[in-house]
Length: 496
Image (cartoon, rainbow, N blue to C red; front, side):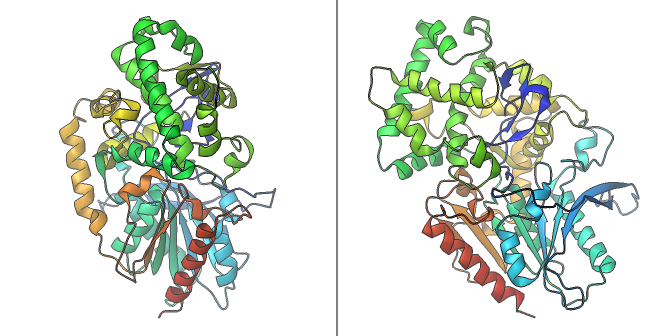
């Protein structure tokens, strides 16, 4: 991830981007997809935050410690005397954004079904702070299991508070990690959740997520219709490796690094190579989606425009064209240089105070539940095997302690798959939605023979694309997918 000035959070790409002191940092790998703010927001009145007294530890009935969890409600379309369904958007690895309460595909569905819309923020993110700080000891209460229990406790309490009868159906919505939670909530609490829409949810916990960059490369081929962009990207990385060995000052200048490579450690260099590979990964994962960030700050950066940049005719070598893309990212993030320091990254992730950054929380979840480490071992020819699995395992150990070794993380991921069922999940009334350009589809359900748990695979779309508001730029495949989701909802809502 990147670190940004005045610790201002910018949820634009796959990484949470932060600028600090005019430098751009990378923080905590193995990060999630992260749902951005919905495009099309135009200053509509937003509902105020409300607070729910939540249990700290759902595994211990005798533990009566409580904390306040943030949520939002939009009852504009809802008739309390003749209630429709309850739409529950599940919070994920970032703050709950009230703009989702007035925009997004789920709001368009809510208008048609006269639904009550609720968004519950995930524990340990945003303003939902269960403990006094983010020490490793306190993070023991951060898990998908506890988050699901939060949702179940919340639903039960809201049924009572709103005086809802048993016929009122709760429908869960989630994108990225919350997409997984939406499916798992239906799995674990079927008596509370009637149906779910799981968008871009990785259901398979995988420590060495080498497929991530494989999908990135395939997406470049798919969107550009050939091999030229991939070939130039491969050539650029080979040139960078050679120049760092023979004439490093050229790469230092072109990529605007904050310190010379002569001062770099082995881990610093892995961080550097991971950073420049991630620039393309970020580009692919959120290609042409309809989010606020894409509309304003990064509207000119798509797979096609960047590939045109690095395949353009001219005398400039491939590495220089790739550096031009990196410069655009730096400039748009208001960063003066790329800080690839491993120690700086780890020190930031060790910060246990609230409000500093949310990379620490998500990294803890990857180290204790999921893995999801986007290593270079799947696309060695394009990116070189320069940020292998041990680079990410070392981060877990350096941030949280030596017990977080590969055996620990592998065992944790294995347990997650056993507990939820991974890709063999046995479930009904859940629609799984994925885009072919989104690298996270490699860990999700993209085909299904079960009509009661269908999969929709949208050609040419990126991460959570179906969740954003409709746009006149939407592809026919995306339009059709949203209609198909609505049809499933209509069918399931009408069921007793």
